Image (cartoon, rainbow, N blue to C red; front, side):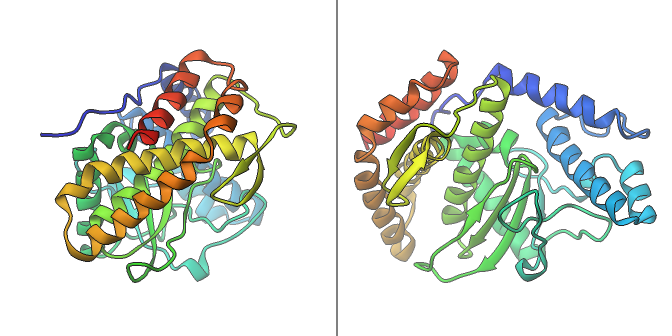
Length: 300
């Protein structure tokens, strides 16, 4: 029986997705109703916008025309079925991913050259989405992990790097170890960042840079934005891990058990600062979402 969902529905996010998708599609003469799923359309429209802008700046008229005729960056054609809906799964070469003023980290934009990930990686990601959905995170991944970019294959126990960027919402970049349960954890983590980015933008909550809080994950003081993000996404992965642990065995079980133990200690050090940081969240419903996840993780 699937675990209960944490309740990721937040009306302002849906309104944001609808409004921004409409704005982006107004720039593409061929935009119609290519994708009925609002979050998917929102994500893919940003890929098309980014690709078209880059092509225009470089004078690449052929690629610019392609995006004009593919306002979903061909995402609907690339998508594969999963437990949370059609997902675009790619495995770009990290060494060839660009860096620019749009992001401090490397990123990947769907393009005319995009091909789906090979079958074994599609199977891995499909299983990871299914595991996360069974653990109660289906709604989160359905709306905030539309494009999954698998990066480096690593060994269990190696440092896994994952990230998301605001310029390409609902896209997740992550290393993996070839295990769907571990990958599910990292999809949840980055989807959580995407959710919070959308939520803050939707309610127009500017956290500023004046207030800083000690982050045990970085062992340094961080602005409220980064601190609150960590105090949201790490608790989500803790809740996910606690829910999937009974179904794991062997090395994966030991790995995730150690991860959860580590996170318990780190999160415990944020109790007082998190309460103060939440005072900066101007929307009461959003504040309650963040407080609930933090409190549930503390009880694990």
